[in-house]
Amino acid sequence: MTTGQLIIVDHAVALLSIATWFAAGVTLALRRTRLALALLVVAVLVTLTRVASVVVLAGRGWWFVQEKVLLGLPMLGAAGLTAVLVAGPRLLAARRSSGEDQPAGGIVIVSLLTAAYAALAGLGVTFLAGYPLRLSTALIAVSLVGAGALLTARVLAPPVGNPDSPLGISRRRFIGLAGGAVVVSTAGTGVGLSFLPAEPVTMGGGPGRSVADLRGAGAPAPGGTVRRHVLAAKKATVRLPSGRDVDAWAFNGEVPGPAITAIQGDLIEVKLRNTDIDDGVTLHWHGYDVPCGEDGAPGVTQDVVAPGQEFGYRFRADQVGTYWYHTHHASHVGVYKGLYGTLVVTPRDAAEQVDLTLPVHTFDGTVVIAGSDEHTVAAGTRVRLRLINTDSDPHRFALAGAPFRVAAVDGRDLHQPGEVSGVGLRLPAGGRYDLVFAMPDRSVALMLDNARGLWLRSGGEPPDQDIASWPELDLLRYGTPAAAPFDADAADRHFTMVLDRGVAMVDGSPAFAQTVNGRGHPSIPDQLVAEGETVRFTVVNRSLETHPWHLHGHSVLILSRDGTPSSGSPLWMDTFDVRPGEVWEVAFRAANPGIWMNHCHNLPHAHQGMMLRLRYEGVTTQFHGSHPGPGMP
Ligand SMILES: [Cu+2]
Image (tube, rainbow, N blue to C red; front, side):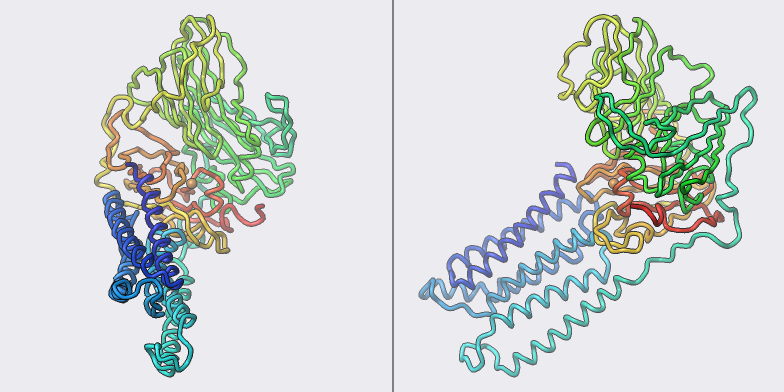
């Protein structure tokens, strides 16, 4: 069973335990003593099952169970055991005597319902707070369970002077008052603690290098040329291949924006102008390790470019491969609406005769591959298809009709990739794959999400194949191993990022956020590194959604997934999909000084808080404002 499936099973058992404890208490309140006894037995069994499911889940990693082991289960265990001790003997006695009509003592009902409250509070902590467990969360949860117990006792308390009452009125009132005071003060302490700020996030000021000074080269490499572009961001109406018009935001009226291409060593100069995008725009070079001042992170590496303003980017195209550019301000809206384009840098001796760049984007539910018109390709031609996923969700590709190699992932060449056929390729949000093959003497179809995406015509129709059943190619076991450029086991810094949902502050407001270690942007502490260090990330996905993790300015070497080491070609990625329950270990050399965004590339997730900064010691910024900054929709 995958960890993701285990998480779902554990949630289901947790829900069942809440339901059975509640059912036992309510049934007893309705004086169905025999049924209540049966439900008590079931509740105990379900609770024991819950212990088992948490133990199994713990085997997948402490991050998945910490709050359950330290708080949820102890709370439920204590309340459940109390309920068994209080209710068990009385229900058994009632059953032995006259059965159904025996009036039940309020304290028995209270004990059963308190176990239900404890089970509910435990699940609440998992869903609303998650990892890591904080003292404030524990205090709030325990005090809420106590408040529930007291309130229930108050409601069920027999009238004054009733001889059945286990407590005299004055004693009862005293206990109620004292208990209430404890609950209120505990909850108050918890809430107070939860508002304590995280470690201060220091940005800007002080001595050191400013990101504004970390700019690109001024000239191309010898023999290179300067590639100049002006990109004007403006609102536009764009016609989809289907003939439908959609409202878009476009660079130079085109979606995707103008294709930027270069030969290795050229200088790329792009002037960004904002015509009428009220929220502002920037340009981020996704996957390209530009100097930090060119990175396009508003509020960190530059100010956002407001309507009527412009900003110049310049960097040398030393890195070959398939990349893309997009706005990084309110990008969950801007990229979705069309503010993106492709960036392809080829070596001087490029081998392919047909080289197609194929960005995929979804407009209002319609998936479009730009440049996917039909192509006629002679048999024997060497073909390269550059697949780019500009969406926030993964896409599945397959190539029908020709064996092929995945020559590059995220722009970086794989080491001796073998020929494959009959496999599906899952491309993460933001990711790129380069497929290469020799054109056969029949047609080839690139399939996208199990529909035909692109047809390369040679002979007759491509073979009709059941691509939906093709297994997914596992890139961690593809290609040929080669020595790593550093020893990741001797990393200088190790950061763990546990991805989840929970209640957290995002841009100054409480939200049901997408969180990293229980916090939302910009309250997640910076990751501090020094130039030249080897840095290791452990990325844990506790949630039930996929998180395509993207670090700016660096590619990371994939070390392992769920404890299984990467065994194929060294795999360098700038965007890797961490699926529900997965644990990825990656590493990189800190060789590009700056302050870099480090975030989920499901852009709505980033907007909902799943974003932090990797900061080099001694680098400062004079740009202010949280990222993506105020004024966003
Ligand atoms: Cu995400």
